[in-house]
Length: 199
Image (tube, rainbow, N blue to C red; front, side):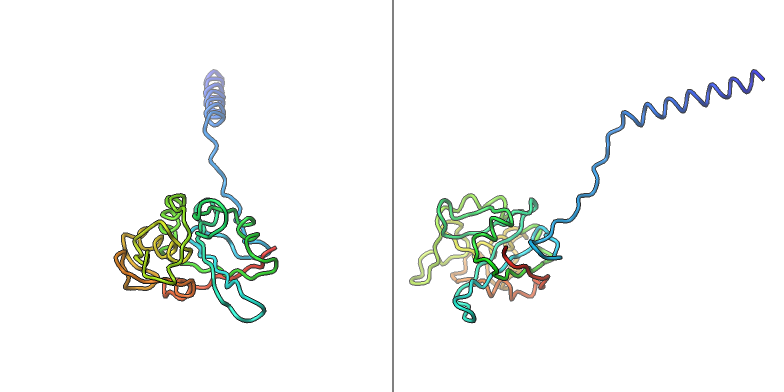
């Protein structure tokens, strides 16, 4: 009988000890629910490229705009709006820079996460928006400031991925060239993931 009392007390001791240890253990973080682009079933991911044609009228696309989604799910991009040209916008703020009901397409890349990290770390250094359309001034792809949207995305992929040109395929930072939004989304490294309509 003493043996059973002893065995019972040992079991109770270990049970209380395990309860105490588990109560003091750190709680593991739970997986976060996915975040979707507004009104869509497309999950936001770091490194996504968001593209809008910014069409004029109903059919003629005269210019496009591209940004990259960061690890914080903000969109990093360069545009001429007030303040610094380098921007970090939440997806709804980014959407509000476009017309209501505009389609924004989403593209993915295997090399997008490192590009997103570079964009997050460098967007604030851009103070001037400038597209060198009338002269060769500032055409070099290596110059960070001034900048424009598609050049910034090219730089993010290039510098974020150990100076590998995943967008055009053969440019480097010394190249004097212009990178268009359509060249970005036409890259063999990107695949179409879906779209959403601006609220």
